[in-house]
Amino acid sequence: MMRIDIISVIPALMHSFFEHSICKRASDAGLVDIVFHDLHDFSLKKHRQVDDYPFGGGAGMVMAIEPLSRCLDQLLSERTYDEVIFFTPDGQLLKQGLANQLSLNTNMIFICGHYKGIDERVRDKYVTREVSIGDYVLSGGELAAAVTADAIIRLLPGALGDESSALTDSFQDGLLAPPVYTRPSEFNGQSVPEVLLSGHDRNIDAWRHEQSVLRTQKRRPDLLS
Image (cartoon, rainbow, N blue to C red; front, top):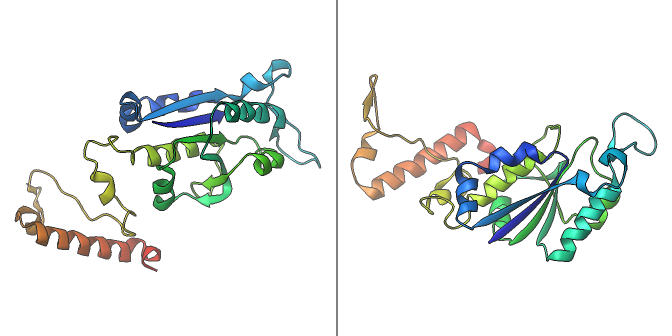
């Protein structure tokens, strides 16, 4: 079983996400265990404060080093982790290849940043990988953690009804997925391509590959380079 410990200032933001769909199914099947840790529980300050002013001044607050360090020390004393991941705009961009790689791990810690980020000393001492889900800034790392977890969990054997489904997703072979169709074959004057109705597997595979290449050339030519 894979275990993902998620450290957050507002873990309730993610509860609903993991209680539905593929993540819920994987959890119920014993494929993954998602454990949330409220950083406020590790604060020794009045009102369970988890932020403080940055040295040098400037706008914004920084996540306090003590509660985060205390939480990480506790987790790391309980088991061995393959990765301690911090979500940050200046991290490695999340792509399918990285999701594939992370899906092979057993235990991971996800740190969800807030405010202006976390004390650099935490990054230096504990973090093994920094990940970004895009070139933009969110209010916190919770959404990035949820996106990354979903991309990983759906790759676990047994998470999807058809295990081969993930292998035909966009980006798995460096291409975008081809167009897909379902019943009825005729709808409002639009028809499904004849090759998909032919039952000829080789021709269908060739058509799908051709369409993947054409779609990638048109929409994401950077992938072909």
